Amino acid sequence: MISLLRRITVDQWRAIDAETERGPEPGRFDARVLAILMIATGAMIVQDYMDKVYADVFPDDGSRYWELGGFAWWAVWRVIGYVIIPLVGLACMRVRIRDFHVSLRGLGRHLWIYGAMFVAILPIVLIASRTDAFRATYPFYALANRSSTDLWIWELCYAVQFVALEFFFRGFLLHGLRRAFGSNAIFVMMLPYCMIHFTKPLPETIGAIIAGLVLGTLALRTRSIWGGVMIHIAVAVTMDLLALSACPGQLACHQ
Image 1 (spheres, rainbow, N blue to C red):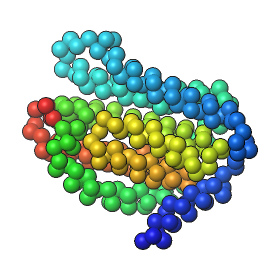
Image 2: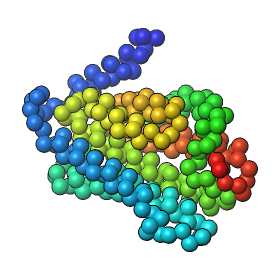
Image 3: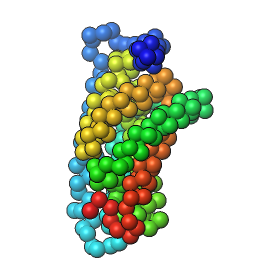
Image 4: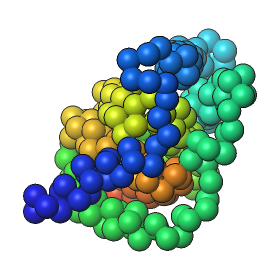
C-alpha cells in the first residue's frame, strides 16, 4: 500500500520536476510569479464582490426565473473571473495560451483514469447524499426540481463554471507557477482551491484538498484540464440528482 501511494504521489511529482524547464534561479525574484498571483487574486476578488450585487443590478420583480437569473449571473462572473481576466493577463504577458493545459491532445489515453476516479468517488457521494448537510446544500438552486427548464438551465450554468474553474486552477495557476515551483505549484494551487469550498459541508471541504492534489497532479502529467472538467461535471450532476430524488416535486429544496 505504501509503495502504491508513493507511485501515485511522490514519484509523479518527481517526474513533473524532471520534465519542467525551471527558471529563474531558486531564490531570485520572478516577475511571472508576481503577475500570475496578482491576476489570480484580483480575479477572485472581482468574483466575490460581483456575486453580491445581482439584486442591486436586477431588483427582485417577482419574476418566475429571478432566482435562476442570479445563478446565471454567478456563472457569467465565474467565466469572467476564472477565464477572461486570466486570458487578458496572459495576452499582456505575451505567453502562449495553448501551453496552459487547454489542449485535447492525448485526452483519450487518460480517460480511464478519470473513469476509475468517478467509480471510486461514487460510493462516497451515495453515502453523503443521505446526510442532512448534503440535502441542505444541493442543488445550490433550490427550485431546480420545479421544471425541466429550471433543472437543465441550472445544470448548464453549473457545468460552464466548472470549465472556468478548471482552467483557472489547473491551467492558469498551475502552469503559470510551474516554472518557478515545479511540482510544488500543486500545493500552492491547492490552498485557494480548498478555500473556495469553505461554505460547503466539512467533508467536501476536506475532500477538496485531496481533489486539488489529484487533479493538479494529473493536469501537470497529462498537460490537460479536460479530464478534470469531465469528472467535476459528472460528480456535480450526480450529487444534484441524488439530492433531488429525495425532494418532492414542485417544492423548493432545502427550505
